[in-house]
Length: 266
Image 1 (spheres, rainbow, N blue to C red):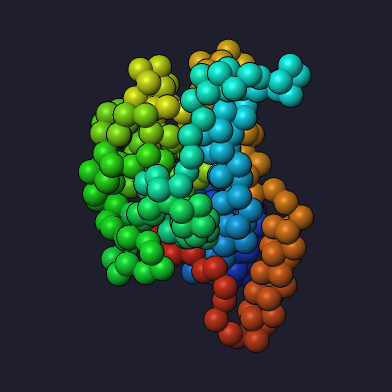
Image 2 (tube, one colour):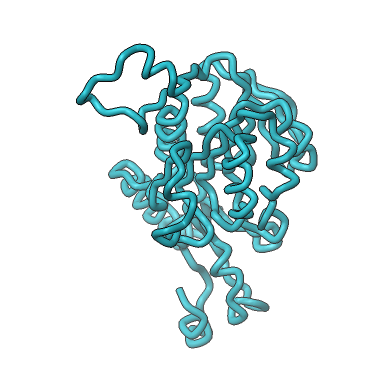
């Protein structure tokens, strides 16, 4: 969906995106001033991305990425890698959309103490404590694991910077399954080198893809996947259902699913 395509379509009334991220489309000048309905896939990949989040996190906390079955490590060698349990740990989830809500749910299933920061106020529910995103740094000081599930907006770009990582509880883990541009990469590298962070799990980076010789690629306390957290047959099936149902609703004049608020950026 490009600027020239929008400009060449004066009767365009609705755009259905095939992904959750909307920032590139909103940046197109050809879209400004147009009364075009925008819908996306804001919840279709949430369950799968949450599973991927914990797969990467467990790889770090259980030291899975540092061991092979041959030769089988001795108990002393395995313990030297620092395996840890997630139970009773404090999980801080930034964002409570399709991804953040699923990450919070799985965190509860692991027996973690879950706090969610988001832009809108909300009362605690289902064993989850909700707080304002303005308190992110204060809450990070007590967190064992921080998961970024925020959309990329002007307010979240570069949000996870040096001040944020300095505020973290020493030895915490950081997971990014949202957008690479919300993290200041040099600040993340510095926090890993100083051991302020015990490890990082990244499905997205800035830049993306990372250069071959980038420091993050050589760190033993980093797990990186190439922006594939949402990939699964189940995700494709849910996306098709959303597209089909939204087409039916549009033709019938009914309320649409996953409507984007351009003012909020998601």
